[in-house]
Image (cartoon, rainbow, N blue to C red):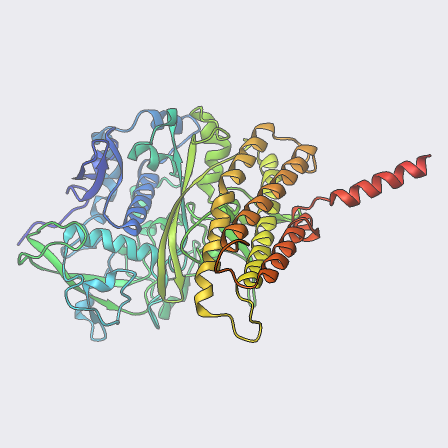
Length: 551
C-alpha cells in the first residue's frame, strides 16, 4: 500500500525556469527567483493551475493591509513560510486515499449503483464525458497529470449533459491575469501569482470546509438546488467543483503520462462520475480574475455574467471590457474588468512604482475557451497591454474614447468587406461562392491586425495627457487621427486584394465602383457618428452660420 499522494509535499508542479528548463517543484518552492511560470504543456492547464495557486495563496497568506502587498511582491516568502501558511489546508491537498480527495467528490462513488465509469480522456475539455474516445489518444495519467487535469476540468467545465453542470463561471469562462514587468523584465512565478491575489480572501483553517468543497458532502443540485456565495464562502470561486468525480488508481504498467510524459508507479486510466453535483448560480458569483458584462435575463432582469470568448483570438476589439470600466451613454457600467485588474491599475502599480502608461510596463494575459454549447472550439490565449491614466474617472473617459474608436473600426471593416464583395464577386444572380469566405475573413483579420498598434499607441498617448473633460479637444483630435488611420488601412487592403492592373482582374468597372464606394463611405457620416465627432463640413457650416449672424 503506497502512502497517500499529498500535493502539499510532492513535487507535482511543472514550471519553466529562467534557464529554459522544465522541472517539477513542490508548493513550498513557488517563491524561487528562477521560476517564470507554470509549464504543463497545455495552455488550458497552465492557466487553471496558476489560478489555483492564486486562490491557495489568497486563502492561506493573502495580504492583510496596504503595506503587506508591496513588501511581499519585492520579497517572496521562504519555503518554510509557505509550508506554514498552507499547513492548515494540507489535509485538502491529498489526491488519493480513503479520506477527502483533492477536487473529487466526498463520497466513494464506486459504491453507488448509478455511477458511470469514464476513460481518463474524458477529463479533458476536448473529449466530453460519454463521447466515444479514439483508442490510443489519452489512455493514462500519472498522479501529477491527474491533479493538473482535475483542476482544469473543474475550473472550466462545459455543459456535460443532464445533471453534469458547468463551472462556476460557465463553460470555459474568460480569465485575465495581470502581468507586471518591473524594470521591463518578465515577472517571476511568485510575482505573477502575488500580483493577482485579491484582497480580503484570507481565511482561518477552521473555515476550509466552506471554501474547499471536496472536504464535505456535495451540495447536490437535485436536493438543495443552486449554490451561491450565500451558501458557502466567496473564496470558493477559486475552487468550484461542479462535477462529481472519483479517480481510480491502479499500478503503473509502463505507460507514460499523457500530460507530463513521465512514468509513474501509480496511474489513472479511468474515473467514476455521477450527475447532480454542485450547480453554481453563475449570476450570483463574482470571480476576482474574470471580467463581467451586464445583460438582461427574461426571469431575473438585469444580471452580471462572466465574459466568454466567442471565437479564437483576442484583440483590441475586446480590450475595453477586459481592462477598463465601460459605460453606455456615460450613464451606467455595461462591462467590468476583473477585480484584480482594477485593484492593480489604481493601487498596486503605484505601490511598486510601475507607470501603467509606459509601454510594456504591465500586460494582461487573457485566456479561456471559445465554446459552442458543449463543444470547445478553441482555447484562446493573448497578451494585451494594460493602459490606465491612474485615475478611475479619467479611465472611464479613456474607455469611452476607446469604445468609439472600436465602433468606428467595426464600421470601416464592414465597409471594406462590402466593397470587396462588389469588386471580386460580380455575379449578383449567384449566391456568394463558398470559396469567397476565406479571402474576406483574411481581409477582416488583416484590417484589425494592421490597426492594432495605432489603437494602443493612441490610448497610451491619451493616458499620459489624461484630461478631466471627456469632450476635451485632445480626445476629438485623437478620434480624427484614428479615422484617418482606419481609412488608410482599409484602402490599402482593398488595393492589395482588388488591384486595377492585375491581369486576371474581374470586371474593371466593378472594382472602380467598389473603391469609390469605399472611399466615400470611409469619409462619410457612418464613421463620424461612430466616433461621436461632428463631420468637418457640418462643423464648418455651423461656424460660418454663427459668423454671419454675428455680422
